[in-house]
Image (tube, rainbow, N blue to C red; front, side):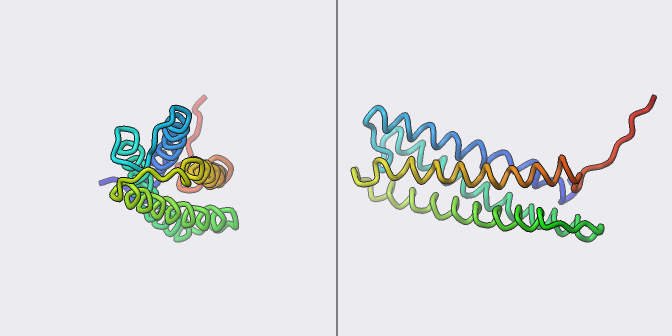
Amino acid sequence: MIPVQHIHPMLVHFPIVLIYTLVVIDLVALARGNTVTKRSGAGTISTFIALAAGAFAIGTWFYGGLALDHAEAAGFSSDMAEIHESLGGITAFAFLIWGLVRLGLWVRNRELRLLTIAIPLIEIGGAILVTATAYYGGLLVYELGVNVAKTTIAG
């Protein structure tokens, strides 16, 4: 069985890659004049990537909380962890809400010119948010060694 504190690091890459991919797909669709609010090829792919980003972000946030509980039970404490946890929660719920909004737009199957520029801009904001969250997570691992086994170099 995989230790619970190791699930978060396995999941964390999915919402990051999915939101970056979503930004690229929607910017390309915008440049080509394709709408992503309809049940078109680009719209369907974009919508379900947004939903996947939301689902993976919630799972990552949940297991991140368990990993933090494990680290704190072992005596770890840091303001950096609190910042990362707060950003993780904001990111997870923002991505979940965005995925559900995108699903609602897709179900309505209408071309909404008003949202043509807004959709990629919102997703760029999401990419910035996930980047900030990942930055603090990286500091926890690479600077503080949270939930990382210490190794010794023989020699």
